Image 1 (cartoon, rainbow, N blue to C red):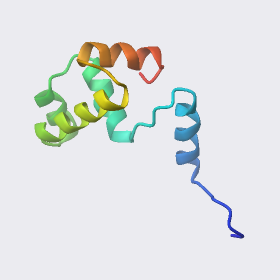
Image 2: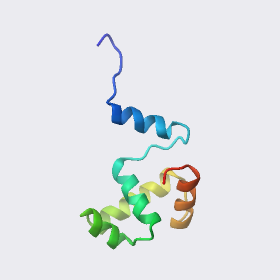
Image 3: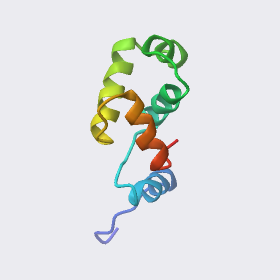
Image 4: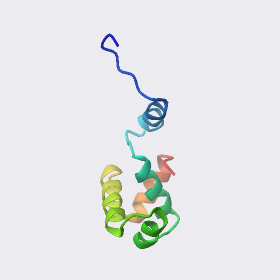
Length: 85
């Protein structure tokens, strides 16, 4: 409408929450991150979310890249510092 951009409330909230951190996570990445922070393995996360372990591994790798973390421990630490979990 007249060249303006309109976003759903959910998208607007997600962008606002992550604006300061500069990190935008998908809903599924947030779910995976939360379960990783609880100490679940890839297989346990996969079973809980009804996805394959390979998909969990892909989400984990994407999270590591997005948060510039070197390993799972630093991933959780950074996510806590950014108040993503």
